Length: 339
Image 1 (cartoon, rainbow, N blue to C red):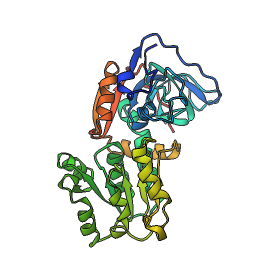
Image 2 (cartoon, rainbow, N blue to C red):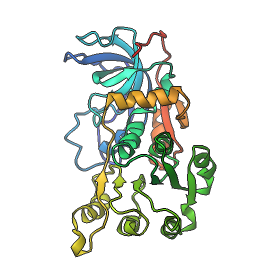
Image 3 (tube, one colour):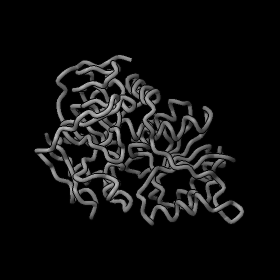
């Protein structure tokens, strides 16, 4: 089978990614596992960061096949009757860090996948990590009808975050460039143009009308936004950041923010790191919102399997608007298990 693989961590994933046209088809080894004929793969930072981090070179066996979020057809079903051969499902790979789905076939776990329903494989593959991260950053943390600030509103988690927050009844403000402002407004957000260099000032001005009750920081490149969060957020407002590379440039400021107590000059808001966990009832909710057109899947690019390397170049540029999806194969059946 075909599989995109890398054998070295030096220099990041893009220069090391190679198309292996003779890779072995993976085998089902556990009762909840199923062999998937992959139709589409949604790319996420977790697909390239293990290839760049000092912590992962020996934790992931080589050659490694990236690709976590997928949509595909069940070729060999699990031991239970949850899914059958021919069912079309979507979700995340069994091991989100090892991936394995940028191939003709991959292994999925029934705890990490649901029926695709009426969605296209392209839209479905774009949802899991970004959609669940946005959902889990917002839903359990604040009551309805609150005000949220999303730093970086035009990426995958940002575009899902705007719409999920709106679906929950929240008022949303985001930062983005002027280039992406109209998109974010069309999704329901108020916009602050960060390129003007006055983001913190603008947040404080906005807070004079009503303070923010939660911050979802998809960017985390401006520590001052956290240190000064008490000046534009309500008391007890959570400050959520996404997982980034386990590098000194990220870990040093993150740990200082996380560990320095208030009485020693630490931040006055709780800093929490979130990574979307495979909670199927939440994934079903997002799928249903997309089906009902309450949430739109924003796509930056849909590229053919042969152009996966170029897709990673785009992903690592940090300038994606919405999600990048790699098309792997055409569906051979329309069957999907209803839920």
